Image (cartoon, rainbow, N blue to C red; front, top):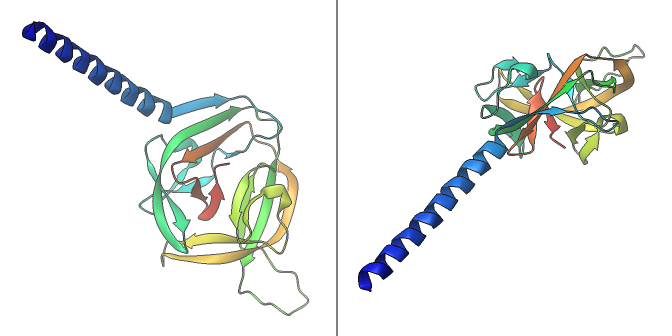
Length: 195
């Protein structure tokens, strides 16, 4: 009887262990996915050549970033890294990109001449970016909004203000979006949000 009880207990332990192992593997597989997304009105994506800032500070086209790689992001005014857990791919997306032109926040030009934008960020109108007022959709940005830019040469995170927002800037034939563990990442060294 004692041997039978020990055998049953061992069998139950192995079953629980196997179920735990399967659950862990399923979790890893579901976190590491590349999803072919169907384009809808509220999709959020970047063009295939949008430069993502990798953990080592180098830039890589968003189309070349892989699940599991580490990318840079910003938190509390400092840079940190986060891991890519999903990549959304959009074939023949329907939404045109919105262009946001940025300039340094401390730029206080007083002349009457127009200011030439220093940075260009392009994404769909519904893509979120991180601003001084929290996450906002690209199409809702105004000249009152500040975005955050990482400067690789100095490691400093600086504030950049919106100079202009141009909807329907251009169309692309393929587009991408990353989902990260932290919920944010850098595109052309500007902080953007997953969703």
